[in-house]
Amino acid sequence: MIRRRRKNGSLSPHVVHTSPEHEELKSFVPGLLTRHHAHHYLGFARNQWRMFENEPRAKTLLYVYRVLLTGIHLMRSGEVQASLPVLLQEYPQAGVAKLLDAKKNGHEKQSLSPDSIAAHVEGYRRLMALLEASRDESRLPHEPSVYDEIDRFVVRVRLR
Image 1: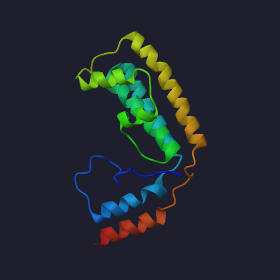
Image 2: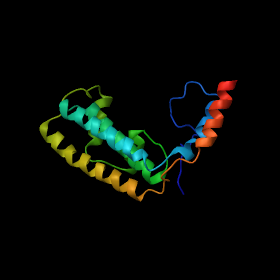
Image 3: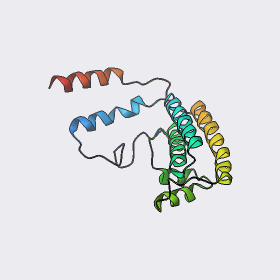
Image 4: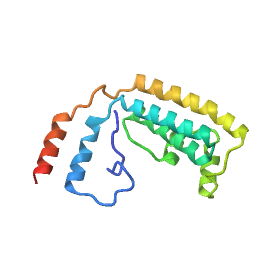
């Protein structure tokens, strides 16, 4: 079975204000998730990797890992999970705990050593390939199924 929502019912841990409309809008998410979301994560990861190559810092590399693991998790489970510490519990990655420690200790903007960078190049390539494979094997649909429902929702809310 594909899970499409966080266990707490929210799609983000950072909800400042909610409303009945927000709750209704969240209910459309399962019908919006498709295997084509992998393209977003692949492109975002490539862009983050280019940024990392220009400025090899822990913070940028953590973005690369978060994006790739979020995409892999979505393709495999149908659930949007963007918390890197949570994702690492299911998809452990060598050297990432050290990067998280650097961030936690305020050192995320320091440049990484060439040896550290080399170790992460392979991880990046492996995860890109895994995201592509996860997309190809995903049980998520090819197309969203809730266009009409969203159209009616937007019209109803705008007419209020």
